[in-house]
Structures are given as C-alpha cells and as structure tokens.
Image 1 (cartoon, rainbow, N blue to C red):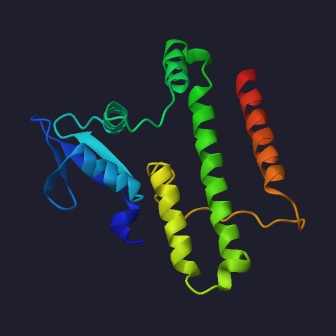
Image 2: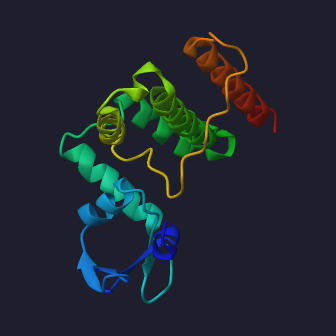
Amino acid sequence: MTDAAAQPLLIKRYASRRLYNTETSDYVTLEDIARFIREGREVRVVDLKSGDDLTRQYLLQIIAEHEARGDSVLPIDVLTDLVRGYTDQAGSVVPQFLAASFEMLRQGQTQMLDQMSRGPMSGMAGFDAIRAQQEAFFKAMTGGMMASSGPAPKPEPREEKGRGDLDDIREQLSALAQKLSEMEQK
C-alpha cells in the first residue's frame, strides 16, 4: 500500500458546500466518496473554514441517499433500534454491538475466503479468478462496508481438524454475548 493510501483521504468542504479532494485537486460528489470507501480507502471530511470534522455527517448522508434510492441495506427494525439508541444514549449498547457485529462479519468473510484458498479447489486452473470474483461478490453484497483500509486480519489456524463452521459461529456469538454482558455491567 502506498503512503497516500495509508493516510485518510482528506476532503475539504467549502462554504459553497462543494467537496474538494485534496489528493487530486478536484471537486467530488457523495457518490465519489462512497466509491473511495468501497475501494477500501479511509475518508475524512472537514470544513475548510472551521476545521470541524464532518465525516460522520457525510457518511450518514451517503447511507440515507442509498436507502432513499431503494438500495435498502438496513431493515426497518434496525433503523428503529438506532433511533431508540439515540433517545437513551446513556444506557445504549447499540454502537458497541454494531461495531462488534461488523467485526465478526469481517472476520467471517476473511476466514471463508482463506478456507477457499486452502481448499481442494485451490490447485485448480482458474481458481484465482474464481476467488477474485468471490471477493468482488462479498464486497458488492456488503456495499463495501467490509472493506478495510489495511490488510485483512489473518484468521487463527484451526487447532482441531474437522471442526465445523457452526462451532466457530457459536464461539463468536458467545464472545459477543460476553462483551455485551460486560458493557451492561459498567
């Protein structure tokens, strides 16, 4: 990864509300910012005059526009729970739960792709093309949400042969439940 890709892409918002890409010295749209993120880039949006960080506001706006176009990713009950979380932030575990859930999804995706590359088909001619298509499919299915700015974490090697994916999922859910329990006790 180049030094530029390792740093967040800085987008400056001018008083006219136009968004300026400081790397390419041109104006960008919300869709351009969404594309940068889907490509795995970290993006930071700041107000030129005040220096305020506006990243969260613009990320929410991108999600809202996708939802309005019918690209629904978030079910109504999830959106309702998010609104509830904002009304009772003191006791809300929603942000931590969402972060942990997305991390579990990212790890599961990484493990599956790693297993595919070590499986019996890995020696087959054209397997690399199939694997690349599978990665593109996951990226498209998650709307780029699972893209990370750095290399994906390597899954831990399996200690027991024949251990099923269901056991892995149970362990991850148990760990998540433990984290939530700890958060509720604080």
